[in-house]
Length: 200
Image (tube, rainbow, N blue to C red; front, side):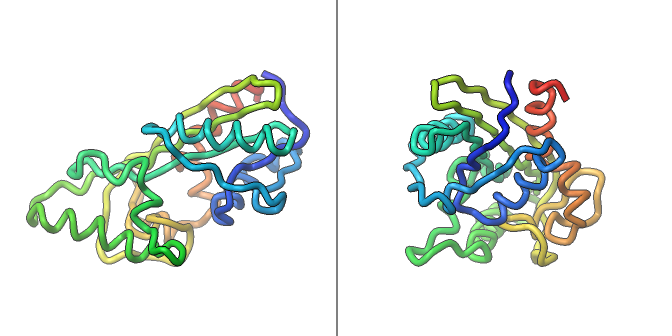
């Protein structure tokens, strides 16, 4: 699979853009975010992470005329039947932007309603989709398992990171050194598969 020299990162989320830029920086690939190009965010109409990642990558590749990389990721809580899942960002919507503190409270309230013995196992899932303007595309999926804690801990990361402790660690993603998170996260797992396809 060819490795592009320039890549549109199909996200308007600055936290996600920063993580992806850090992951591709060693490859010498120049990244530009969809927001910087003024590209609209397409409606995510699919029912899977891979499907939504492809929607975003295809739209950005067509609009920019460049290869595009899109990430669709989310938190899947075992005791909640995999929710919030592909609706992860929707749980944070307020009509005036996203409120991740509110989203974390929703998860905790749903778990609390199941009783004190409800399992707190969860996983973050990431699907990376690459799309070229000529129609070529590929998808790479990764995950990291862990457990949820309450109250949230740490100011680093974004989204649900402050309530997620990955297996084998004591710190939440919100407390963790970004370098360590980049090595063990669901996004890192998906990127490792992408880099393998690029011959790295």
